[in-house]
Length: 318
Image (cartoon, rainbow, N blue to C red):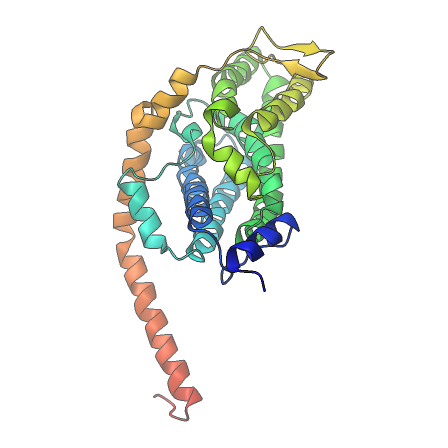
């Protein structure tokens, strides 16, 4: 009979999902908690840059679709917090870690949205990078995470198309609108490449994550796929990617691209980005102001459970 660790390794090798009640190494559990809670935090914090434009959207249709998108992101966060709780940590603990600065969220959300075109760039580039990262997670070895990602990826695909359509409309507009479109692409391109994380030789967690079939591709592999796709898509917009070093490499079958400013990446990660403090303060404030809602929901749930239990046992309440 196999011991628990041998059985776990066998499941990983045979592509059998690990479920919450299964035995798993503590390092595997910790890695999942870190990755999944960070993912949940990113979905929630990611509502802030776009929510900033709901009242300023240029038309009622744009306003309605942006509201729907922000609502989707909230739902994604809730799916992921719930999935993370299956690993033995409470949602409250993960949120406390975020507020205390012990947990991270995607660095991309620490940049400001200066114009309406930024909403398009976030949809095309940021959500596009997220899709490139997240579609392989639908095959992650941990069952609750993989299942949550299926719906999330479907909705993110819509978000990307929405963003690209915003930029396409601007790129077909006035000279000022074209300039706005290009400016947004210029500002969001490099931070979007940073979303895939450090280069492989500077990312010790990636290899272990791939050994456990949590991740399926390395950071650099995913980043390269993203660049290849975007180089073709930007031609439809008749815009330019802000990298003069992008060129086709016949030998590799991919586009070469310039060096990422990793100093900027790590500075933002340390909390020194343009909007780090603003984003975290907004989340803390929302959490504090929503305390009464959580308390009321808990009281209502307790009353509902009491009513259900007394009815089940033959004691109908008044």
